[in-house]
Length: 302
Image (cartoon, rainbow, N blue to C red; front, side):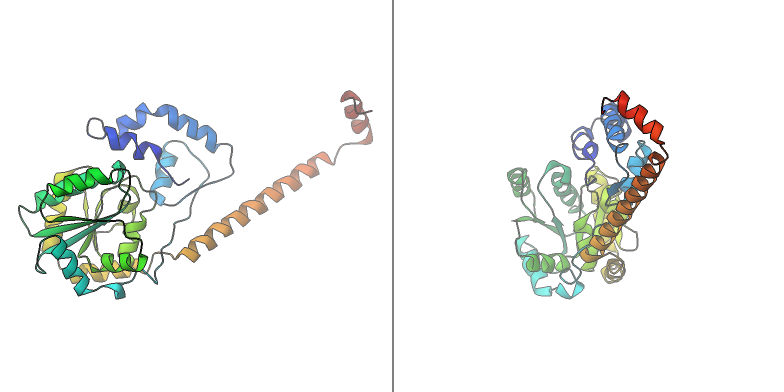
């Protein structure tokens, strides 16, 4: 299951007035529905350990974690370019001495890009930092308008050239992320594969793979906490953080590894179903001829 609908919608839109626990309680009917659906299957696949834990807390069973993978040949520290870094900082109206942050993703309320713009604006009171926003989507025009009112923030829009995207991510000083509803956190994983440290919330797919060695972690949904995390990141040694990020990136599985694990799981479940069918057939083969004649006559077969 590649979604947490309660986190994507209710917790995104109601998070400012209710706690996550209160929202989960209000949507108890949804969790009840999900438990009934889950009970009809031999297994439920999720992409992150955090999501398996969350579903288990709401009574789902037979959960299996098969993490996604990333293209580590494309997203690599070798893609880093100081020229591209300077170019991106120029977009923000800044020089090479500034800290360059990048955020990548679909422009949708769950990504909390508005919060990231607020956080960068707050952090700029203390340090020289720019933000390049990559992506497009439902909230794109709203993002553009909000960014236009802020300083040193540039909306690059959609980048279809994945090689160019990898270079931009690898050339940033850090990835800034806001979503807590992603099941795996592709962008975070790709940043680590690039050797790019991350500034991420303490929940969701991004929070699940974050570690203080290469990440600055903040309380989710809180612009002030995100701003503090940016300021703390700026004071740290980027080369040390990048080295730890690269090391973490080597532990992220490839796309091929993901599908190997996934198809291996399917094979296991298929074999399990075959055993169950064989056992079911064996239990019916104990009928006598008298049993057959009685049951078939009762059923009107003869």
